[in-house]
Amino acid sequence: MATSSSSASTSDAAAAGEKRWFLYVLRCADGSLYCGISTDVKRRLQQHNAGTGARYTRGRGPVKLLRRWQAASHGAALRAERWFKKLNREQKEARLQSRTRSDGLARCLRALPLG
Image 1 (cartoon, helix red, strand yellow):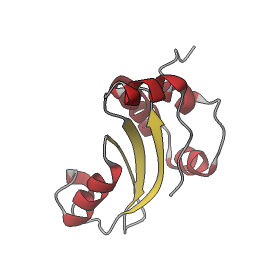
Image 2 (cartoon, one colour):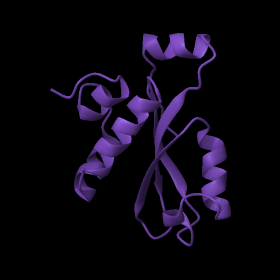
Image 3 (spheres, helix red, strand yellow):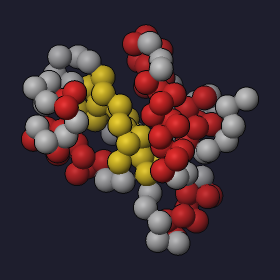
Image 4 (cartoon, rainbow, N blue to C red):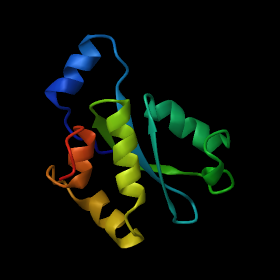
C-alpha cells in the first residue's frame, strides 16, 4: 500500500485533534476501480470486503487497496474524490502509477485552487 506524504497543514490538523481524511482507490475482483474517502481506510476496506461498504463494491469483492493519499481536510478529500472520478479508466490507471505531486489530484488534496 502506497501513501503520499502529508502537508504541514495536515500535520497541524492532526495535532489539533482533527480527523485526518484520506482518498483511497480499490480494485474490485471484477477489475473495476472504486474511489472513496474515509478517516480510517483500514476499517473502510474491511467494510467493503464484508459487503457493508458502498453499494458499488457489494458483490464485487474481494477488493484490494491500490493507493491512498492523505488530504488536508474533509473538503479537500471530497474535491480530490470528485477530480479522480471524472478521469477516464486509462487516466485513472496512469494516476495510480504516478508519483507526481504537482497535478490536479495533488492540488485538490492540498485544497489549493485548480487554476
